[in-house]
Image (cartoon, rainbow, N blue to C red; front, side, top):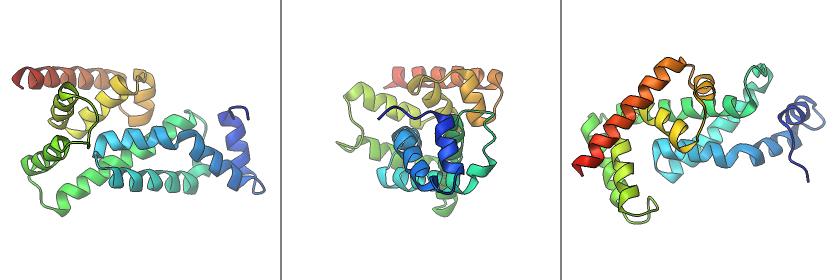
Length: 182
């Protein structure tokens, strides 16, 4: 089967006769990438799994609002990013975490064998990422791990390219300092 284009996908979804097939194709095409983005933000598989489902449910409900000004991929990433950020905010408020407690809990999760794959350097990087504010962590993930352009990142986050560059620069500096301290 050939790789379906975004335009074909949108046509399938907009036609009531092929809507279900279109939705299935959308999930097949983007679920893994959306899951990995969210997982990097929230760390825990079950949370990432739920938030990925929420992302696609929101996308299905709002597909008629999709204008095509951005790619379907960046639109889904924007929904997924917002889901992850609001989840993290709610979690902090619900458990009355001080930032330090929240940090400690996530760090202990990173320290458990098997939770984050890779060696000690990877583990140190994961811990360093946890010291960043959520939005800086997101920018770092989108640029460094997803290898998106600043233009794509701007579409996803609704943030100016200049602010994204500054945020990425600050994130890299903080990570460097954290890794040197390890």
